[in-house]
Image (cartoon, rainbow, N blue to C red; front, side):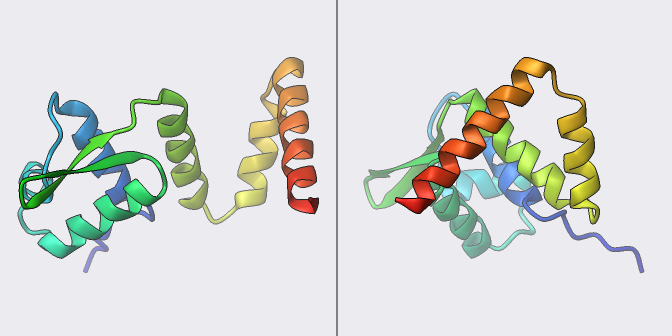
Length: 124
């Protein structure tokens, strides 16, 4: 029997893309309908809640329902996609090695600066 499960983070990405495609905020029921009515409503609610907790979606109250809209920050969405791709490969070290090896000198220095800043933030 073939494995029909989504890759880790795949449903989150699908939900974000659904929110991004909409011109209006969406309820969990609307997201569920746009994605796949076979998904449990509670599953969609959980994903939307987690996206809001991660800062990738904005949750607001409309009447008795919560509505969600995407954070329209392309960098955050790209970072989420990159993380999803990294997590979908068993050879994380290989992927990261090839990624860093493909960076320009300027991008490599920027990445090193960002990593150094992150490390110093952890120490304080």
